[in-house]
Amino acid sequence: MIDIKLLDIIACPICKGKLSFKKETHELICKFDHLAFPVIEGIPALLRSKARVITADEEL
Image 1: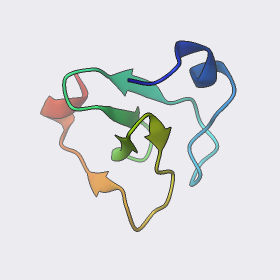
Image 2: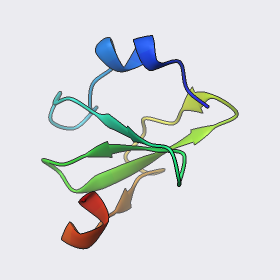
Image 3: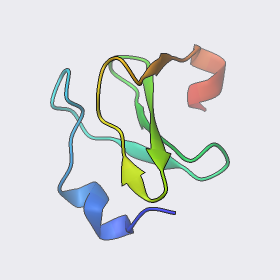
Image 4: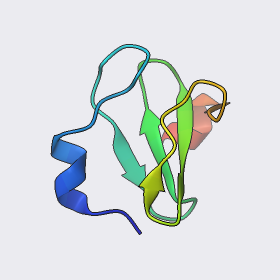
């Protein structure tokens, strides 16, 4: 789980846009870049090399 207050502070490392947390997959989602960043043991892994590309269906 991630501290919800953290979402107000952190941003996408690529575009600096807002990230949303997807509870089911424990990922932070950037809808602008279509990337999902994993949250590992409560710590966001905000590295391009750790991100995966997501489809439009996954963003909903």
